[in-house]
Picture (cartoon, rainbow, N blue to C red):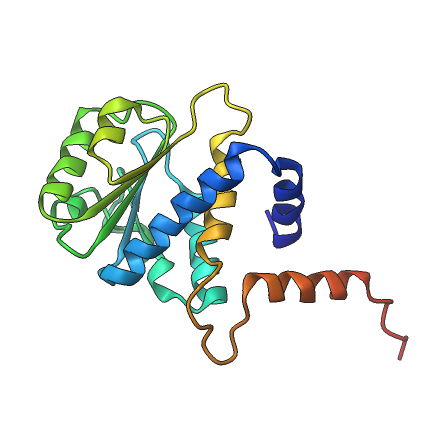
Length: 200
């Protein structure tokens, strides 16, 4: 989902609880990775890997000038033969420490093994955030949670788009050569509405 579609979606959702909820959660995510600076671990369940969220956070990290937002995707079936960025397995959660942030995306109950790893990471000092409908246990052990119950007005994928877009906004001073989300959106709108270039 590109910036224009996110803006249109936000317009449609104006006045609902979703805009505030996704911005609050994104603010908690941004605050955790910026203030702690220890890295962001992103993990889903054995049945659901948050590929799209990982890709969007990488984009937001680049656009906002906040490299801390680029996550390490932790995969349940990672193999040593996978490319380096896809070869991080659940053992990485056991190494999570104070200063790191763990974002768990779960459309349903995550299962005992993942819950145990998340609990251990929290006990070791990692900040835990939960997104989805991972059940009460995951929400309870999280520092911040955004529930997306089955049958809600928005599905988990849409909420992930809103969260990732909001995570890169309002970054503290924008580094040279970087533009705020609003500036990027304005530039994109101008580009899309500009007349076509003359033929050469």
